[in-house]
Length: 255
Length: 75
Image 1 (cartoon, one colour):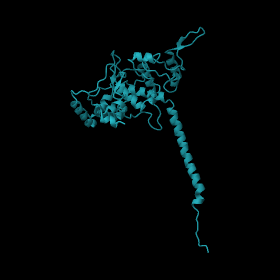
Image 2 (cartoon, rainbow over the protein chains, first blue to last red):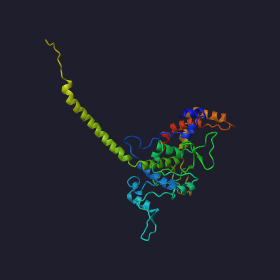
Image 3 (cartoon, helix red, strand yellow):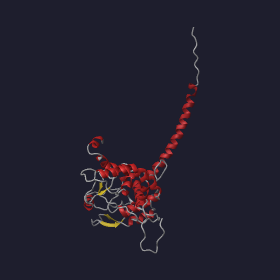
Image 4 (cartoon, chains in turn purple, cyan):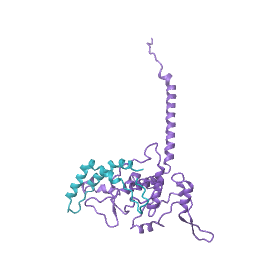
């Protein structure tokens, strides 16, 4: 597939696919590892203060965060900070009210056209499922956020775009937004750009796969049970076959 | 972590460890770096040429080396 491309314009394929992200050692890697919920909490703060200005996460409701990153009271307070359109009321009018935990995270733009118009024609994608919607999701997202570099020799991107080797094609409409000290974490963690990117990526990984912790727990229990069953079944089979496998057959001359 | 600078009006921003991790991986990726720099020199002044391949080789090497190192410095 790439061979013909390489024969002609050398390595045009590489920029097309983007530089492959390395495998970072995430806290939830492995069969028995859960999410780092402190990181999810910090990551949500980063999303709220940095990313929510342009990116929606419409599939996540405030109540999804209860027991994951915040307590119920904290979530109620978080939701109440925003105003949500509700209605119609008895007069047939739409009205605004403070948010409730049942409300979803509000998108920054009314529709895709408004989003594109505010971002030079590019649409900042909804991030609810981004870690599942991109190959090698979490690694890709972290590499992208921290990977803004000078373009290689001979490559230039037009005004309005920025070079990022991980982005397919290399020219991305989003500038570098995660910078040192951009956020102040309440648990005192130093907010370096790598720390912020790691935490927001962990938060996005949770958003795409909220069932992850429960899935691994159930998986571990069932695999354990299945192994016990395997042992029991093996024992039972060999017990039933014992007489057959240990029989002696005597061949004798028939006159 | 920095000392709490309560008396100063501006606190200095925390310093990111990523550039340091990447710099420490440079010796392991010298071959790719030299290939990239050779390409850079080769295409100087030429139109329509670029060094994306060598750039990817170099930064791919740096990434693989520094990934674990970087995460060890983060909380």
